[in-house]
Amino acid sequence: MFSRLFALLSFVTLAACAAAPPEQKAPNTVPGYEAVEDGGFLIPAVQERQFVGSPPREEVAYNGSEGPGTIVVDPFARKLYYILDGGRAMRYSIAVGRVGLGFRGSAVINRKEEWPSWTPTANMIRTMPEFYAEYAGGLPGGLENPLGARALYLYRGGRDTYFRIHGTIDNRSIGRATSAGCIRLFNQDAIDLYNRVRLGTVVKARTQEESERLEGKMMEDEWGLLIPYDAARVDEIAAKRAINEEKLKAQIAAEAEAAKRELGVQASN
Image (cartoon, rainbow, N blue to C red; front, side, top):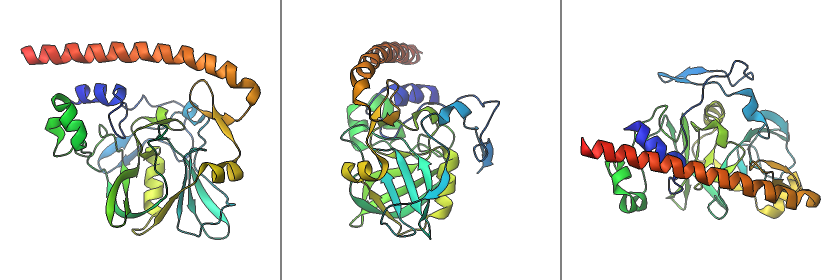
């Protein structure tokens, strides 16, 4: 059953905050991103190559105006900062929502969960009951769960925004704009941030103007990773992206067809 859910979460765009299964452990790992036992689960190490364009967490000088204890999400630079004392901050690489779907404004963390359950939205259940109805009560926490090892729940005016800052089982998504709105971190980073954050923490999303002023103007390369803006490369990258997108469409179609065949076989048994 989990394999069927993974096929859907990986390739259907309606899957909010969803992701693909974990990859194999890499022989070379970055300190702080080794495989780790947590809550009875073995979190795989982050492969060294997955930090290309998405650097490991690091304490850095912070040039923003926010006070200590604030979380600042920069969806345009795909970074998250946890503000420390003395003009410093912990910086994390993140995945963010596709254009028009990301978190904006500010919110407050009113809930924290270790190995959270995941529940499809009412709209997902209504439109695709054959996939989601049985998970209406929630998918238990674990390595198959798209929210990963930790989740911080964002509220505004006392109401759940349905935006989350959470871990992920799809390390390849970090540094890209691929989710349906939530803010993803490597599981190791999600644990680190979770341990720092208290209930009531304010979360602020930067505007594009703020991001460009503080981080510089960025653009996506042909793989969806950010690079400094270069007007001379816009057409070249667009052409390469078009080729990559056609390959991806073919892959998605093949996977969707395989999932349908699997469902047909199961239904006939």
